[in-house]
Image 1 (tube, rainbow, N blue to C red):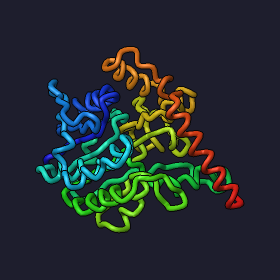
Image 2: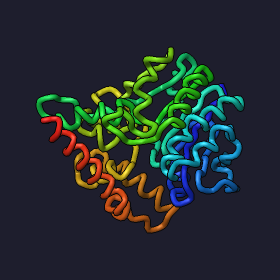
Image 3: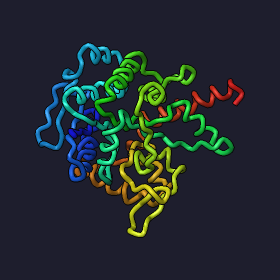
Length: 302
């Protein structure tokens, strides 16, 4: 089976792209691809991964993505990148955001794709209606599945075309309309298409938003496992995850954060995560999202 792992990035996050593929290099035989949304002519010459140019994708569709901002264009390009690789001979392709880092092989996910069309990972937000009402409602506001990971096989072409059409229709955060960029559309994927599997492996897509919903421990080999069953496969190190780990929400994750930080520093010496955590853009986004949600709850009478 011919397999690939791909991501979408910008030049400013090239160091994260390289850290991602460096983590995979020794643990999978898959090919690696990156689409740089802001560098249509970029070349990558060191052999770590191959660059796909935006004009190599379906031009009739991707030209319509120009109406979006850079971030939205990056998110909306996912289904078209996956379709491109499936149409060029790959039997199974995994997309991951460039701030993901692997600690064990994803080969078992490729094996699943021999039988499945699509693989999705739930956010696993807290969902206790007595204690975690805001997190419970977050499942419905932003989506059940995290769009930072999706696995597809050749059976998924129709599903990827549908998802791409959805992204071309609208890339907006609108709680009242049930929209959240590219991500909320994934809620319909298991309903509309056959052989879509929801990955229950809690060592996949570990992140700040699901730290509270799994039990982590060390097994008799000293390896980190989740719910006494699943080994750690990959962590989604977005700014919220980094913030939660640095804040000490789970000491068992600190060695893995330190390994990732070391990998980032090899590509970007003196990288300072505090600047990313406390960036004005991320702070404004967090405050805006929370403000809008609290106002909506107020008018709804909670």
